[in-house]
Length: 236
Image (cartoon, rainbow, N blue to C red; front, side, top):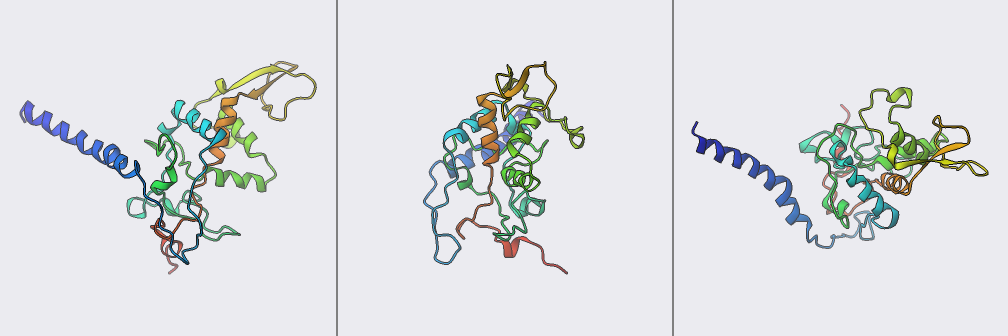
């Protein structure tokens, strides 16, 4: 193989990947048209995810710390993988109030975001519906914010998380002197007597963002590419 052929082949390989991953998604998402809502499709309003306040600040903390390098936020189409059938990834198959909430990710899930954090790998679990999964902790009487703060401070502090590859984000917390009663947000980790570990504003924003990740809300039929009747495999 000549050097010229090698360079052309290398350029073509990177060019096709750049076209598919960057250029095409950019032109598809830069000017999304209004969502078509048809009568009787199960929705009666325009689908708009929450993107303001502390949640928006948390998205910036998420991006600044490179969380997207290990976590995706993309429930792939069924033809590209089996995300719809993984426990709670695409939604909840048997929600007591809403039924089967599983669905694939669509472009409107990222509307209003400065950067669509679909991720570049899945070294850690997909976070598309992390907020929905964390709600299960509520049922057990635990505090979901406290659970996430503990995970961010020391991802391996729980016995069932000893092999977690998630890095510690201790710099998002501070050690302060206890004045009066301990803070309700203090973490249960060893510290000097009279001191406590509490989250900084960046940690609070990040946790608010993580709890907001619920991409299983009902969408118009025009966006539901894998409706529940077709998403779940039929029993033999």
